[in-house]
Length: 196
Image (cartoon, rainbow, N blue to C red):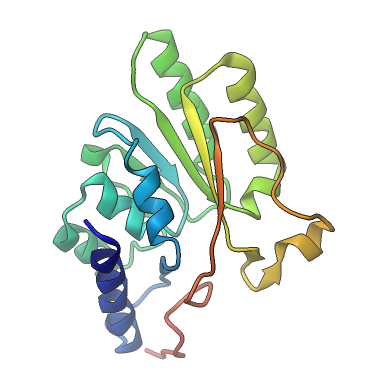
């Protein structure tokens, strides 16, 4: 899968949404293709992904066939994509899968497993109490969980740095990753008001 493949997939989804073929919210990926490709160089098939509503690229890069992912999105599941066979869990609830990531990490550690749990979230989620408690628990217990924070400097349409009066995302452990990018799509939808 290449950056061009990812962009082509999201463009197809955007076109379907704008043609009123998807009767549910969507949150499109974009502008972070190179970062996602770098992250997924380290993600193994047996690893877990826990994320929120912007998971199209993660699902594709984890191995969900494009036609299976598109069918789920067309069925209205864009913001809560779960593919147990690929070890992918997502939720439309902000920070909703972070405690699940902690639990998975604890289970892996207790049984001596070698998998990693990749906890994907946005910069505003990384400012929540849920994130900080989960992050602290993972660090203090040495759990195999890596936090990947996609920082587009926005929470919906609000500037994250203005909200928190900060210069950037909170400090993380050295093996976590925060990357900045510009999202070419609106927070939700594909840029056109669609009525059903």
